[in-house]
Length: 160
Image (cartoon, rainbow, N blue to C red):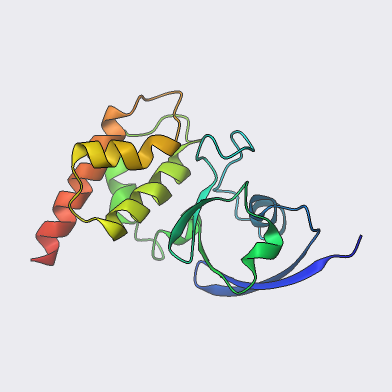
């Protein structure tokens, strides 16, 4: 089986990789690019643990083939912080203990960023709806929702 050559941008850096036709972006990220933040929770797009942004669109990386990444801009959890400076969502998740085991956390953070990029003033219902594709078995969702709401408020305040 021949491999496919793919060029993409991952977390702002140009990358090239070879992939088999059936390999997912999640496989490529974890196994070839050594970006292990995105997790495979279900492999069927139901849990959100593998969420990434592809051309600013929220995607389950377990459902996207590696070959489909050609020419795309991909953001993973590893690209959310700038150097040693955590993204405000990452800081708030830690501050508010909106995480426990960490399997779902990268997906929640990426999904939350996607929401706030589109809607900097979401209602609680909008946050809950947007994050409905991300499952957590440990924390429940209240701390996560509160963290997103707090960051949204802080970002709006900073923008003034």
